[in-house]
Length: 309
Length: 212
Image (cartoon, rainbow over all chains, first blue to last red; front, side, top):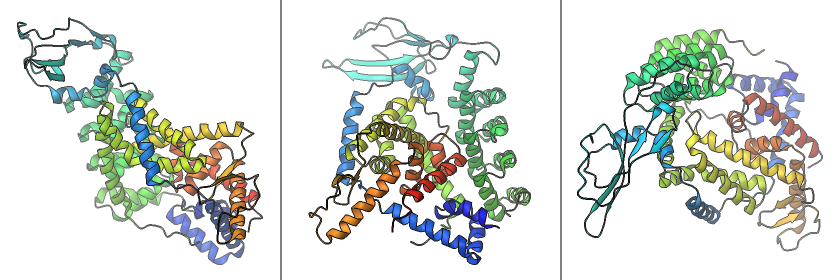
């Protein structure tokens, strides 16, 4: 423990940014070193001076006023168009699917064959036509969502809804269309088997930014542990180079309720064990994690960490 | 000013609570992405005080802070569709606000004719050029003058920083954010944020060396 090291870290020390062990070493050194203690004092005085800068405070009036202005401004902002809404949460379609006799319908056909985003409308808009027969192929599966229900003065009910049609795409893993479909499948499908299959294929392409985001999403939020494990397999190699991956894997280690996912995360993080947050997490787990395997593995990795000199 | 003691909260406990609020955020975000304005407004309410405080302190002007606030949340609303949960919403919002603040700082650098202004605790703005004692303040005019001059010195020292240095110092010293968060907000690493903080504090200490 030398003065040079301490002086370099004095700033981090006064701003509480040192990990526990480093902070302890600094304090031990300060107990014996008047020069470094003087430097600490000088740094603290600087902090006090900087803090004496008079500043405007957020008053309740100001807050209320900016919120109102924002509300007004939001009225004028363009709403995301209908198809985009569907893209971001196609799962909502399935939740809202209901069968109702429709007297008016807007038909929207989603064709994935041309890639996500190729949407077109078709068919006439029929309004208030009670003689129109109920479409015979209207089933639970093909009604996507009910968009609007209105009743006019005569008691006529008008319902606008969307329908989907099944379609199929074939190609290689490098095809944009196939990738787009896999990305949708990974996030929003009710069927965990479908999600698992798509992640299984996507995990080999984690160098693509969008695909990596989807893998991170699956690791963080998928309800099925098998899917999360698959996503982790794809992300493991990226913990060194991508901070977002590292954070997501670290969270999985700390918060996931499945021990297999947690231990997978731990092994993936070994490659970056000297990262300050990873190090701190491992030290904590080594001390008191309820799972014995995690505890002993953490201890093993912590033991290989370089000591502060 | 004493050293703040290290909080002894269990790291896991606080992260579990955090992941719970993340899930709630996820619901609100998904709702907002579907066009539910009430969900978006609820989301805004969770973060807007902190955003406003940052903008207010950084710009030193209520009007500029209002602009930054408005721009930030409108941008968030417009771009919510491209948020794919790859980071926390907190980080995402802070990234937007930080970029807007950086733009503001860069614009201000260019406008050389604007002398830096400081606002005192009465809410009065004054330019550092103005050295005339104001007898409006009451109790001790000498102390008020000293305080103002000090405030002016600090404000002037802050303008010597580059926009990024100013941003990092602002977020660390005045807003108390962790360097890791600051790195994420600036779309860089914690290491870079650390080095930027070092440079900023060195510059400021040099500029304020004779104070006190």
